[in-house]
Length: 123
Image (tube, rainbow, N blue to C red; front, side, top):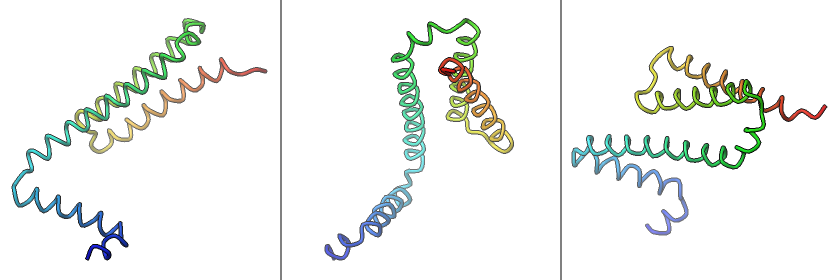
């Protein structure tokens, strides 16, 4: 049996997932599973925020040399993206709100890209 499972890692993975699901169902641990999922959502959001902070910290001297209008657009877009992601991770987005979320992320990302690109065009 050990050789059978060692030759099939995908089957072994599915069996492990099935075993975990069976333990949750048999022990009636739905609430614990929901609490863990909520903690993982918060941890993922904090990891994304920390990554963005590290990127900003490396480039803040360059951003400080931009004009006031460019900084306001760049930081405003970044704040709008963080707010949209926070709302998404906190309460989820049903129905047409998902389309609005994608629009906000795309529009803000495009604004940030345009400001960055205007500062890095060497023509």
